[in-house]
Every structure is written in structure tokens, then in C-alpha cells.
View 1 (cartoon, rainbow, N blue to C red):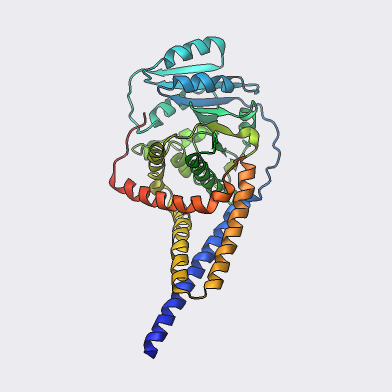
View 2: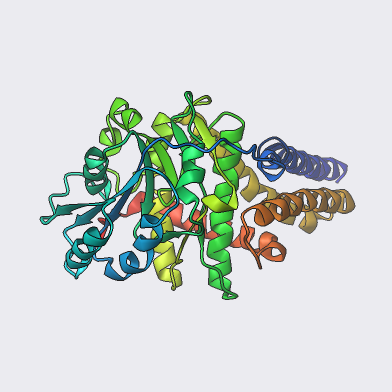
Amino acid sequence: MLDGYFVHGGIQIIIFLIFLFLFIIQIFYYGFFFMKFALYREVPLPVKSEAVSVVICARNQFNQLKENLPLILTQEYPDFEVVVVNHASEDETEFLLSKMSEQYPQLKVVEIRQNLNFFEGKKFPLSIGIKSASYELLLLTDADCKPLNSKWIACMAAGFSNNTDIVLGYGSYAGSSNLLNRLIRFDTVNIAIQYFSFALVGIPYMGVGRNMAYRKSLFYEKKGFTSHYEVLSGDDDLFINQAATRNNTRIIVSPESFILSQPKKSLEEWLTQKKRHLSTGRYYRWKHKFLLGLYTFSTIFFYLFLVLQLALHYTIFLVLALFVLRLAIQLFVFRKTLARLNEKGIWLLVPFFEIILILINSVLTVSTLISKESRWK
């Protein structure tokens, strides 16, 4: 009986030490990575005047272009063009763009009338748009996105310098009090914290195609999307993953640089979108997969071992103290970040949404391993 007591006590100690180790990993990520972005102060950058090509791909997005394109074409910037690739649209997009090109001389329309999609997803039309661009600086966004300020191009272009080849911006979603909307926006902020923080410590690994910029020469130097042409997604994150370095990447997070788009309206649509995006993670560089995987797994098992510790009633007050400390640091980081990114109505739901996303991402990650991706529509 005494031996059984010591065995049981030894197991409890091992479980606690594992929980403590997971806690230390979590604090390291929040303290070394995420706090960096939470406390980041963007230095005002000199206004640039170098010519910029804004590149947009569209397919059957007449309404989005009609609403958003004029906000891009009327940006306050001395020298820019807007290249819109109309990829085999079956609606009135071609007519709309023809009319707009008469009104806006800086609009360049590229028509792809047949769906000759040699690349998966939108990589083929985007490659055509980039090759059709007249200028070295490329600013990428989507047809369903609109700038929140007339200085959007100026803010993103200001991020370039002699050593900067990539500028990463923030793409927000329109907010509402709907719980799904808040979850989507939390997920967007959570991803942004990670890729902005990693970039700040010299480990850039991704960007979002709704709002990022890079040099045309870099695109050609890295041979475009050819290294991952068979992957549905990745025209944004996989290209940045292969092209970004410690010294050639900058983030821009001033409010004037934000892009706004409409989130998915149903849970099914959003899960399909997330599944497609999660499928690209396996193609990241090994160091990025390791760092992101360590954070993800330490988060999952932190909660699992927290529940196990509470069930065992072993050092329960110490365990709860460690949990509260992590929670306090997490809420501080998110409070600062949400204020910086002008996201409202999320902060008090952060712990709840984190657990929900753990479950969703786990299921979707397994699902991506056993199902085939669909093409961009």
C-alpha cells in the first residue's frame, strides 16, 4: 500500500512538472514574441513618392468591385496604377471595368476570358497581374477589400527602404455583435499577433493577401509561385514564407494602412475558408513549423494538464495561480493589440474564443490531411 502511495504521488509530481513546463513555454511566447507587438511603437516614416502598382484579382465580383474599387482609384498618392485581373468572370465585371477605365486613367484591366488555370487557386491570375504591373512596388489586396483611409497606398509604400523588400499590413473584418463575427475577428487578430510578432523579432513567416506589398524584382527572383503551384492557397503566406528574411521585411500597423473586408456570414463558409488556409502550414519552413507547432501544442496541452491537475486535486492553489498569471498576461497582450488594431467587443471573450479555436483548428487540421482541396471560385 505504501508503494502504491509513492507511485501515485510520483505520477502527480510528474504531471505537475509537465504542466509547469508547458506554462513556462507559454510565458516565453507571450513574453518574448507577443509582448513585442503589444508594446510596439511604430516610428513615423518619411512619405515616399515611388510609383506603386496595386494588383487585384477578381472573379464574378461585380458588386464588390463597384463598391470598393473607387476608394482605391481615388487614393492620395502621386504616382500609382491599379491592375485588375478579371479572371473568366461570368457576371457584368468586364462591363463595369470597361466603364471605370474610361473614368480613371490609372486603372489597367487585364482580361482572362478562359479559365486557363495552370496554378491552383488564384496564383495564375495573380501572376498575370504582377507581370502586367508597370512598377517595381506591388501592393496586393482583394476585390472584396476597401481601404479605410485615402492614405492607404502612401502608408504601405512608406514601409519600403533600400533594404526592405516586403511590407506586411493588417486586413480587418467588418465588426458586429454577432458571436460568429466576434470569433472570426478574434481569429484574425490572433493570427496577426503571431505573424507581426515573429516579424518584429526577425522571423517573418507569413502575410495576408488582403494587405501586403513586395517588390516585383523579388517576385521574379523567387520564381513566383512555382515552388508551391500545386497548393490551392499560399499566394500570400507561402510566398512570404519563402521570400521573407530578418532584414528585408517590415510591418506597418498605423490605422491609415488598414484594409476592411466582409467576413463570412455562416459558420460553414468560415470553416471552409479556415480549412483552406490551414492546409498551407505544412509547406512552411521547418523552423516556422517548429515554432508555431510548439506554441500550438503547448497551448492545447496546457489546458489538458490544467484540467488533469484540478481533477487530481494536487497543488491546486499553485496550479490556479499559474493559470491566472498566464491569463493576466494574455489579457494584457490582447488588450493592447485589440486597441492598436481598433477591434472592439472581443477582449473579455478571449479565453473562451481561445478554447473554441483550439477545438476547431484541431478538427480542421486532421480534416485537411484526409480531404482534397477545392479550386478558387
